[in-house]
Length: 174
Image 1 (tube, rainbow, N blue to C red):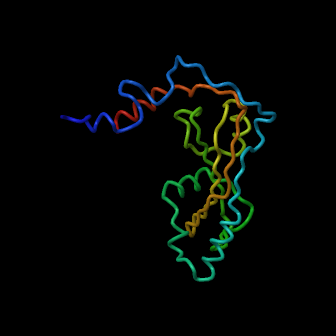
Image 2: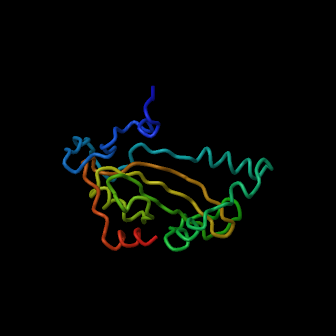
Image 3: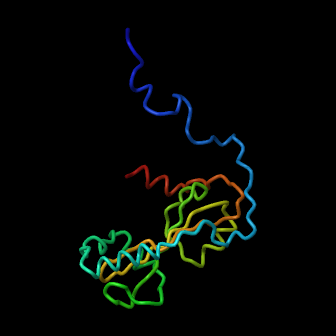
């Protein structure tokens, strides 16, 4: 007696259906948000940062464990970073910057992109919900650390914008 094929049991989605909601399904109801530009669900990583710096300066960690910024993060810091107003905690370089990333289903193809802090209030009024990640980066010693995360948006669910034609062409050629 043959049992079910393993390929039919792989995931929890029934064959022929999609895990993503279709365009015809209604959007969920809006969440009440008084101020779309106010930070919701903030997480501050200051204590972890302090503990990491303490371990680093007291011989508990190697510099390669903390000063290992990804090349793409370093490029983002070079071209899109915003000055923090203070020096790097490791090498004391004055050119210490924050890089802000935005992620969310409603952002569509624009999710995962670097944004300036000044752009966030306008985005908060244009999208229902998206998450913001702020990373501090030193281009000299390659120190990088996630400093805070929070949620912005007006609470009104929207469908993601269509992927621009030029972006579709780029994805097809890779």
